[in-house]
Length: 458
Image (cartoon, rainbow, N blue to C red):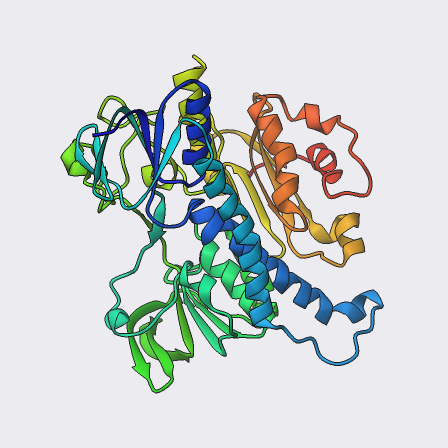
């Protein structure tokens, strides 16, 4: 039985980086990958979806060319095979890079197969049993499916299988009005599909403030996307060449038929086939591995990183998990999950950049707070670009003057949000950025202006 200092299960964002740190520290490492090197981000998440979104954006701007004084003769056509080829080429660079870097890493042995615990510190993979004093779980998550009658009787797409199609769905029906569903909805509408989004809740992206949800719904509708909220899918069935969803809304049932169905109703951790019970590793009722503030499980010498621990569902939180584990383990640097500030983006066009608390969360605290908002149509850079949808919002603690949170829905909001995020990490008062001189013309230059116009949150 091969013995290692450390075993890493999974090659998402956390695993490979940790393998390199451990090897550099003189550890003998085994890393296990059962399918695609690079995990969700590289293969079915960030990298391919943002590549698709980039192609969709070009198609959208080409159709608007006349608004910029550019004349395109004839119609704008999208070659979906070429779009997929471009996406695949981009993905291949990163996937192959991760694979080759691990396979050529001195001190690291790569096992390709499904790793499972057979004891507290033993992993079975591809006919071998591996043992190590330290084990790191980085197995990610996958699409979750709601218990809808008939769903198991029809063909449907997930965020993963969407990566395999090289054609244009005539009518894409999307179950779920959150981040994954909305990004695909806008991209495929811009490619040329008819798109319907069905959301059970009263509004899209329910974790966001009402004004953000409303603004996103409005610009999606303006692009021709049929948005249905307060709509419960009570059944799905095949009808000829179509898939029909039975939708209950306002007490009545109607039917929405499309050529293709995308289920985007959430994620579940890849922990149900890891043999966690053989190792005594604790999970919560949803299957997420329970960890402490340093990402340690209830079993000494076993850590869980990335989507499978329920402490974040983003590439950047997974990377930060690696940083926390390696800092505590190798650098004698006490880092904790609770030190990080919530931050993420929705990559619609315009994008949403988020940091810290929402307005609704601030109101729940009862803290005296200040708020400032600015419409993107008042931002010169956005006006010059002809991309004026959305707004910016910042919330500040009235007493200590620290920024509580921000929502930037608009041109480059996913980048501009970091101006605020860095000040938040520094625990500096908002006056620091208020007095900063930013470059003109940019979106960021209006953040100091917004700080000048803070008003009490009523």
